[in-house]
Image (tube, rainbow, N blue to C red; front, side):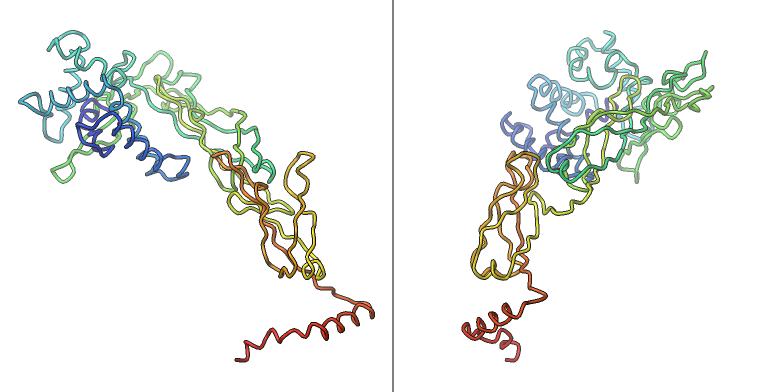
Length: 390
């Protein structure tokens, strides 16, 4: 991000708080927005993930007393009170002026007060760790992988190995993209910023990756033959990842910093693992609840009974639970066994939902048939289909 872009960001607007907001108001606004947009709560939602990063960036500045003061002073200096204002237009003169100004401030030239005013504020922005704009870090690419686990492993959590293909610096050119004996040079189009600014409709300035260097800020005249000048090499890695308890089939797990390696000190990308869960022969899932269908006899359903119902678990006490079937239970009724389901993120556990299936005998002995006829005569039950004829 360029210095100009950084200063033009309104962090107060991002958090939805006034410029005189208290530290507590900023903290409250950040927590609310972070909870709403957190990637773990919105898997696969790129807009929410982008919004979460913006909110986190704003909070990092406004929640720190010193950085907030420097940010406020910087915005006042450049946009108000007769101070310096950003040049208008579609060319890069404004950004060049800005970069020259801060380069002079860091070296002690120009306005002697600028070094103190912006030294801490932009220490992690333009020129971080002493890099020039032409060699600033580039974030590594995100990597995707897939794993398939058993039903019980999904319920209780597990550690699995995964093989993935990730981007790493080319071992031949060490990430420069240039052939041995040569070096990349600053991109003349974007002057090493990696971004190109253009005017949209004559009103708004729009920044986009430079088409000539593709956002690197560097161009290579004599490319490395092994990576064709990209500076990236392919390698297969094997690593162990922890699949949390309660993961569902089709869910994506994000593992921060385990994706492609960054370039020039840039942060590594993230690893996204798509989880497939093998179905179970007996149990199913409904959110944090386990489901099971249990057959009972006609006599058990009519008179009531206590039966053993299997549960999902590996411990000696996790094999079954005693369940009371109330008298007169119809087929299809679902009974709940609390605390025998899937563990949730907050530490609580779902339930086991037991659906009763009343089995009707397919063959009867003469004595059993006679007993049922006697029962029908004694019970004298009303016609259950009478309502259909009304």
